[in-house]
Amino acid sequence: MLHEQMLGLGAVGGAMVTLVTLYQHLQTRSQWPWTVKNGPTKPMYLTIEVIRILLGAGVAWGLAATDQLGVFGAIVVGAGAPAILDKWQRTAPGLAMPEQMTAAAPHAPHEADPA
Image 1 (cartoon, rainbow, N blue to C red):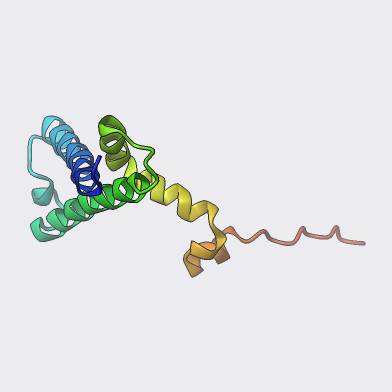
Image 2 (cartoon, one colour; image 1 turned 45 degrees about the vertical axis):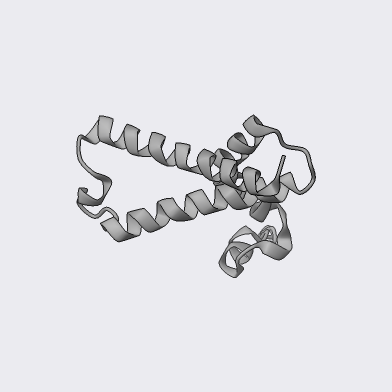
């Protein structure tokens, strides 16, 4: 399958997660996410969702380059892209953010008081 098609299918997977999230929010709260007190503004909400769709497209396209994905696989990878990238970042020490590296650094064990 063409890489462009996998890119599109990954975006579809990301969009499906976006729609499910919006559906669940509307069903439980009966209001738009950007109207919730202390919630994101409408432009911020839309930006977040566009980023999720782009992440899905990018991860599916990257995996498609290895010829390991079919249509359904590309959609699933697109839907799971944020979780895949989060897990990848947590396990790759060179990709961790500085504040995460210091927070995750093991502390030296406390020595017992000789008293």
